Length: 228
Image (cartoon, rainbow, N blue to C red; front, side, top):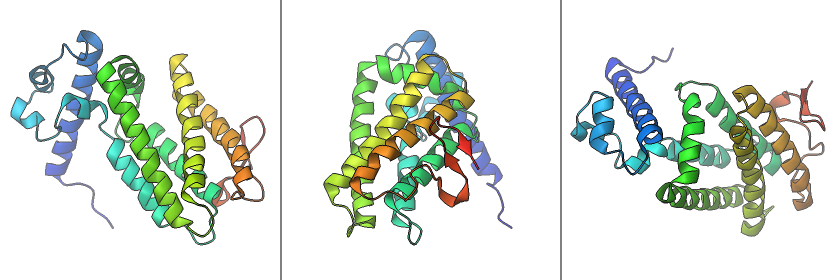
């Protein structure tokens, strides 16, 4: 039996969550540039010094989960299942990423629209977001190429990652912009993945049935619905 996090770790997680919530709410209410680190710390009931033990800057609060997610995906790619095709692996990666987003394990899903609006409207965050997006996709492409070095070259790996990531991100943003609830976003993203997978067949790395989801979970029909 694996024990959960200890008291000290739980306290640190609660403080981190409080900082993220306080920062995003203040950014939304006062504006990103107008909000100071001292104000964020005060809203979370901690000292400014303690803030810097969790985040190096205000920017890092906005992009609080990016590095951990990328590392998890790269590890998944590096340890792919025996016989797993590129598309099957990427479908599994997509399912994991969306599950992390919508499972609500850190209870921060409700702040996603706020964070998205900030990244799209604040120049310094726009620049950081674009840089992270480019760097992340390049890292994923390199990891995918290493995992399937005898099947696809780096250019094909980059195209595959770009196609799937772009489909998911734009579909998600479109849903957020029109105010769709989480369950509707989930279904729309599944549809986006299905569309991207059909296009990836031209690379010659897809499964026999592009609608089949990994691990026997069923398939995506042409309308994007999951069937058994």
